[in-house]
Image 1 (cartoon, rainbow, N blue to C red):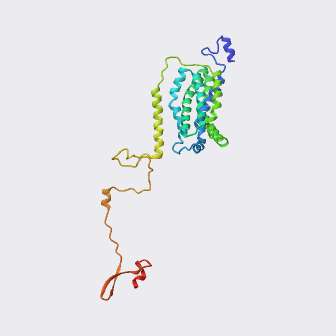
Image 2: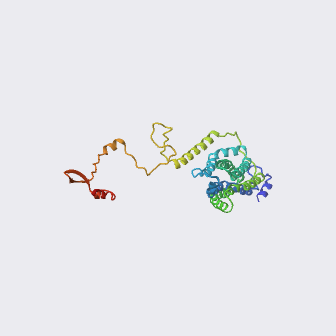
Length: 314
């Protein structure tokens, strides 16, 4: 129907306001990309214990497998949308899909914790470009309000159900394959989606002078990383730890030393001196015996050890 309307009016599919005949294919491509973004935030959660044992990740550091992705995604989201609007939405969408696939392959083949954390950070950075580019493409592809509302409904449903699907898929892959496949599975999906997007999605970009707030993006991302790192260290070191080696003259235990809750608390010196009282001396009861007009003290037998009692009769 839409193709007939375009031909009758003498306009091409690229004309402003014209309905794109491939718009529902574009919706399917964008839905797959959005599902991959949301799914990758939760699919690794089930595989986290297996990855921890395989790469010898400490308990305090294993949460960075999830946190590195979400921090990079949330901190660079505004900058990624700005880049996609001025460089080209389809171009950045395809490039972000290819970068996401490469980062997923790097994480799936990780040999140490640093390699895995770095791959997850790169994944989040490319997802921060992919998500706003997909949302912008959805807005410019569906121009009619009724169809746009339906498209956004599909987009929201995919975003809402992706987390639950990620947990189920992560459990299946970990149980029957390996924890590495929770990351490697993104590679073929992202490559196929990028190829389809290159041929089915029309290019669009915003007009005007491009300005990028790089300091703002770096400040937001750095602040979030510092905040999460502080909460992570507080979980293991506590909130009241003070390193007296770095701050001389201040009382406290060194940072990283576990707090001993079983040790009794010592009272201040002044208070303890006021409460301290001399204890009476405990005397052993003795009896006196007269022998050859000499008086000597003889201890009672029941107060001596059992082996020393016969000595009294000697």
